[in-house]
Length: 249
Image 1 (tube, rainbow, N blue to C red):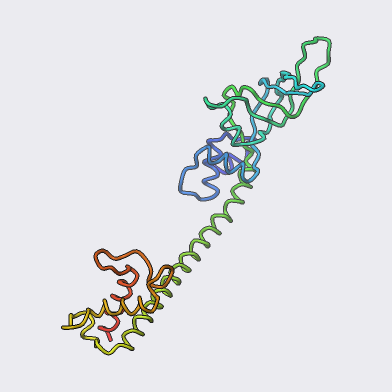
Image 2: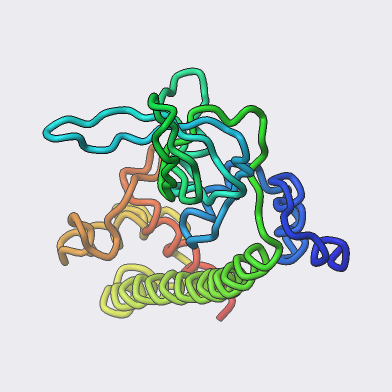
């Protein structure tokens, strides 16, 4: 595939999508619009064979702009890939702005033909968007570092998140251990059993945390409530971890 494409001067948009996926080792097909968006972002040239296609220019004549018809010559580069891709959709009007040679036509037969190098293509007539193989290879080389960097960033973010969650959990456990060490009503065996005349150990711990200001908005144990408990899910999770810790010990 590489040898065939490298031998071609231009490739169409379908082949360009396939080859870019091949070069970047992407397992997913690339839609045509996505390729145009990438070309816009990374300033990758896109061409149309404008030979004999009609277009217009609007030169200034005095204080007015006068539309003048032109005829394209050879391949021209589109100025904006996204605008070019959308130019002839049903809800659009106008054309494709291109850079490349065209001949300006005149109503006066005796006048000399003039050439322009920036004009608006008004009819694509089914001509495909074209890409140079070297430009697609350059685009692939720009995308590969992005893929590698994104993968690295994702891994680092996952590790950072795991570290943060672990740190927060340990902080909550530290506070529950502090309560257990300071109180005198409950021993380890009584933490999950009712005691006559006393609230449950979990309730007592929650009350202590509340009085310590650790369940208020923005604090360590603040969060959505566990169903029917009146306590935050963060506290319930830390309490269960504390029980396992005490029972294990």
